[in-house]
Length: 241
Image 1 (cartoon, rainbow, N blue to C red):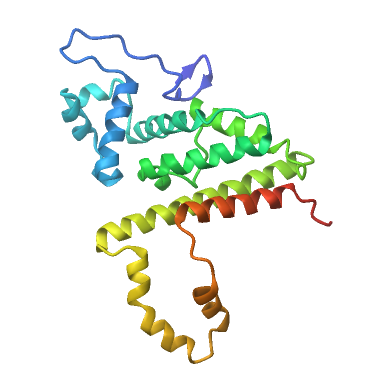
Image 2: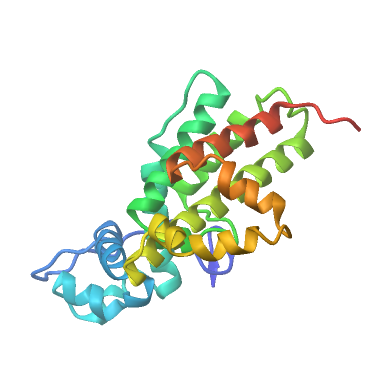
């Protein structure tokens, strides 16, 4: 399709909203995305469908296709709505404070909307709010002492994003496991205590034993903040060539 932006399809964020219809229920992409987010929060992405969203909105399923062409566009709108919350972390006068605020707000958003972590780690999200978060993060990291050029900035962003995605997926997975099994992590660890004691007594796993017995047992938030600080400390260093 030829468009003012070139040949190809126009992203959902650049297509104008459909003209309002004379119908009992008014719709908008924002309203559709908000409804989809509520359903995904309650039932996960597997429980999300255009039919369920339409039923929640009180309209026929076909009417939603005036606003989104497919499920992929629906997910794009949902993800960008979450990025809008993250973008509110805002700018701070110091680069490190900005990165910390964005990372911590991203974690909060992922815990409020667990499905969000399932959609991280693939191709970058390019909605307007996602781009705003990316710009704030990149601009802040570009001011870090150890970032001396575009190559350093790319590596710093890669390291930070890999940490955040991995940490969020790990935490969300543990929450889901606790719900599905009815056993939280401390209870699970306690149930394996006798087995681990026997294994450690063999002397074959001395370092793992030290980690389990002597290591600090931080909660998820403390672990996230500690490891995030470690990542930023590494970014500010000047590695030897």
